[in-house]
Image (cartoon, rainbow, N blue to C red):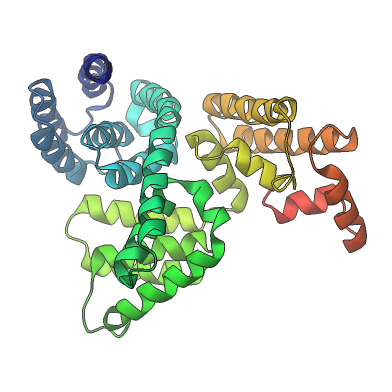
Amino acid sequence: MKRAFQAIFFFFFVIAFSYAVLASGLNPEAEAFYKKAEAAFVSKDLDTAETNLLEALKLEPDNAVYRYILGQVQFMKENFLEAKNNLEIVSRSRPSPDKGDDYNTKLKNYKKKIKDLQEKFNTAGTSKFQIYEKNKDSGQKLKLAVTIFQAFKLNPPLRYKNFKLLEEVMGIYESALQASFDGKEWQKDPMLQLAFLYEIANKKDKAAEVYMRALDYVDNPNEEFVITHKFDYLNRSNKEKLLDTIEAGDFTRQDLEELIGSGSQKVTEEDKQKIEDIITDARSKLEDATTDEERESVLEEIKATIIEKQKRGELPGQEELKKKLEKEGKTMEDYLKEKGL
């Protein structure tokens, strides 16, 4: 069954691979590398395909269609961290008038497909977290810290459930990378891992500092683009980030339960479906949104839906939340604003 699935996946991906170059080949040299990647992919030589895609992105680093194909190749190689890294950039990319309608159509379709991969990313992240739990008493603090980074990168819900662990892991990274902070040496990958941990811990200034320093050590335009994209994303508003997370499929029912204050409550299947419907509806609308104004309106709809359902008592766990807000003198609108909505 697994081989049959892989064969079907490969067949349809070859079709997508072939069409993508027609839709997005704006730089002739980049397109030449892309065609080499396509030939290698058809021959099932994923390593050569990946190498040529990276060369294409050095010449046209903002081509999200090429980057999507690279992410898919890395996903097929089960290099989940690199695949996640590239596909995140695609999911956060916006349409480009300069690249034409074909490119923007492909980008829209590919962004829809990315969310279908999140379950496997979550599974890989859970596996990493299980490795940590199995070995957490081993004393190998640095290895365990890297394992936690991998788990948090691949499986977003794990970050929210283990916030104290995040603080501990950052401390381990900081101690191990003191020489880099002192300017004596630069360890690119570990420092970028730490920047990611800073980012998800809402330590934006520290994350920005690392990303800016990393730009002094880039080897090629693609690497510069990736780091610059991370820095730019760091400065997006909480609303924009929330929308990106929902659209990419990283935002789950459990996340929305936490957002509306019912995460610690026992939720019925009926309540779960209500929450799932809110996310699914928002994701569908985001996939069709092409402007910042349209995306903003989707977020306002989510907020209005939550407030209306809360007023009608249709959301789980609202009695406890209502008591908490009354005690603090806050409204549901205040609560959602604090949460980024």
